Length: 341
Image (cartoon, rainbow, N blue to C red):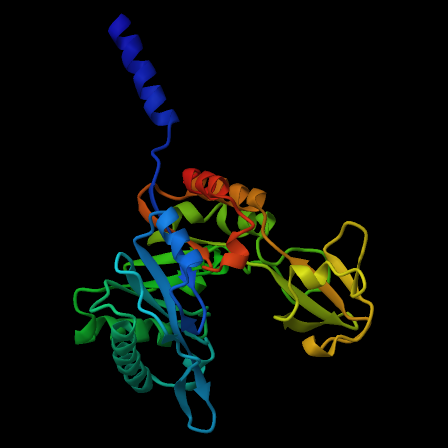
C-alpha cells in the first residue's frame, strides 16, 4: 500500500511540474551597418549567445522596374565575433506577393540566396545554418508566399540549411485562412500586436489582452516548432489632429522628458507638443504617444507564453541589440525573463 501511495505521489508531482525548455537567448540586429561595438558585444557574451539574427535587407516591389528589389542592405564595417554564428534575416514586404507570379518568385528566391551568401562572407563567416524570412503574409498572398518558401528550400545553395519564418499572432489564431508555412520552424513575434494607428493610450508594442485573445486557445495546437521574439524597444507614435502621422525617430526619452517641449497628460503615455519642432518634422499641437517596455511587461509575457508553448530547445530573441535600449534592463531582469521559459 505504501509503495502505491509513493507511486501516486510521484506521478502527481511529475504531472504537476511542467518540463522546462532549454532556452538560448540572443538578439536581432536591425541596423544597416554592423559595427562590433564593445558594449553590444558584451551583451552577447553576458547571455552566452551562440548566434545573432542579422537583418540583411528588406525586399520591396519597384513600380518603375516592375521587379522586387533589395532595400537598405546591411554593410559590415566589422566582422561578427568569432564565437557568434550568423542567422541572416530577410524582410519581404507582403505586397510583393500581390505583384509577382510564381515564375518571378523563383527568380527572387534565387537572387536572395546569392545575395545572402555574399553578405555572410562579408560578415566574416564562411557559412550559416539557418535562413529566416520575415513576411506578414495574408490569406490573399499565402499561396505565392508558400510557393516562394518551397522554391527557397529547393535551392542547391540552401542544401543542409533550415528555413524559419516569422509568425504573427493573427496567423496563429486564424490558422485556417493563414495556413501553415512549409518550413521547419517559426518564430512567434510577440510585439507590434496592438493597433498602432488608433488614437489613445494603448501600448501597441505589447498588449497582454491581445496575447490572450490571439494565443490562449490556439498556441498549444500550432503545428510548427516555435522560437520566441520579445521586444525591448521604445518609440514615439505621432498623431496630428487626432490622426496617425507616423513614428518619430527623432524623439527619444530625453526629448519626451523635456518639459519645455512636451506636456504630459497626467500620468498617461500621451504628450502634447508645446512648440513647433522642425528637426523632427513636428508641429505645435501634435500629440505623441510614448510607448516603451518594462521588465514587468516582459515577465508577464514570458509567464503567459511558458504556459502554452511545448517545452523544447528554443531561441529567445530580443528585438533588438542596442545599448540605449538594453541599459533599461539589468542582467537579473533579463535572466528572470529567460527563466520563465
